[in-house]
Image (cartoon, one colour):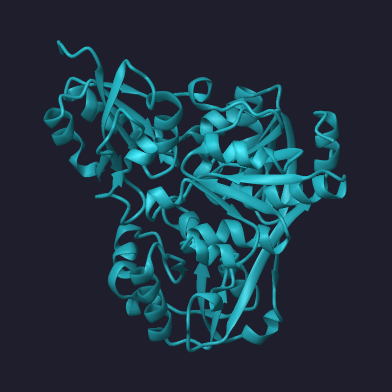
Length: 441
């Protein structure tokens, strides 16, 4: 039994939910002392310090961030009472393995829920969540934002955090023009989320402190879309909660955390990609929705894919670059670039053979990746390694399935063909009708 008046806490995360949970639940909580964070999933985000500027007066030296691999050691070193799990897109089995490490070290293991972590806004909020990374949240957010704007509403998107740089410089970030991506030194993953919205003239907020972020966003919004990254559950209490599911990973809606939470909480379940997915997979999601969330409105939608003059790649050798998170920890074996390549009977190059540095390590870590290249770019060095991998790989074209313009940040020796995708509404009720039904417009 520990004699300390405060319970000593480690928060295990991935530079997102972990910091949010600290800010809203632990920062000014006299019953707890957070002694450390651990980092997983994203390369290069450990061995930093959560700064005192964010941590508050109780933490004059800030809070250290360690690799998650040291969890058992850290529990014992810091005499930890509670391990708080705070990241997303992991199997239920993996969550319980981490719980077992904590319990075996005599610490308690906790997952804070929406009741303790969601912030209430004075504006209408739509939450867009998912069951897995890569299900189609981003295109859903874009479509909803377009409908709201057409209805005369001022809409602001608050995006799930991706603070992978200097934390004290990322407290509250506002993105309204392409130059803002350079201003905040955005990674490829951040650009993939922000750039398509900026191009369509929407304002996006992100960062570390979502209390401050919400306060700023409310000044210029009638309606806020809380776009949840990595299939995390919402940070803002929603008036409408939409969960996007992926039939290419049918059944995962009951196997992953916190995707199952989103699936069970949703007011509306969108089954995406039904224009390309097997019917039996769609049927599995319909059955699971009926079993665990029978009150939800279930709607089928498609994902429409576009490419610039795709006939140019017919019979050619191409490097298929795909959205990084979707094909790495999201587990997808292919993305939109691969689909276009297959339709045009192009030959997929094998970038793994020519990969260097951290890109080579990514292939080792995710052995399901075959003949595709994840768009990894969590820092200047990794961007250089991605560029070198592309330039090393023999091919006629780069087929870019990431939603950003890679030519803005990479110098490659092959022509780039950009692939884009958008939500395709295929049945009633439409998204506009859904927004009316829930009194959003």
